[in-house]
Length: 89
Image 1 (cartoon, helix red, strand yellow):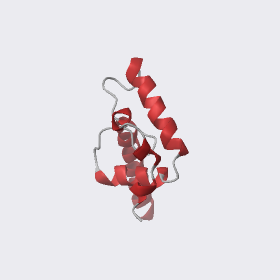
Image 2: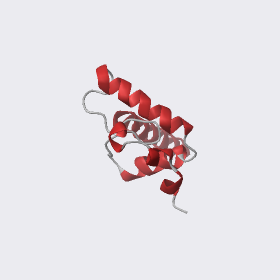
Image 3: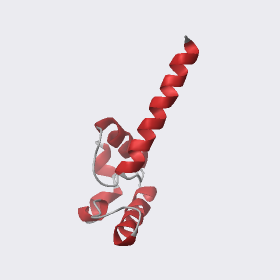
Image 4: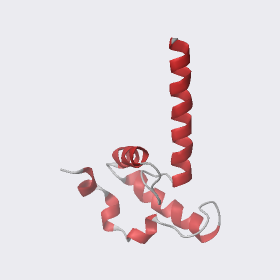
């Protein structure tokens, strides 16, 4: 069974996960928070986040993260990988 078939977002309006506007203020912030609340209850949140991180820049809320939050996670992971590579040398 594909992880998406077990996702809770299937039962929500898709627009909820694609707020229009800045995700850190106003109505878009409220919508983002509501979408993340659905994600946090979802049994496949981790797999969803993995997919979004592996897929590159993906718009919307996936795995309880925004696109900006996933960019930060990727940068952090790249720094950690670089640190490990340098310490192994």
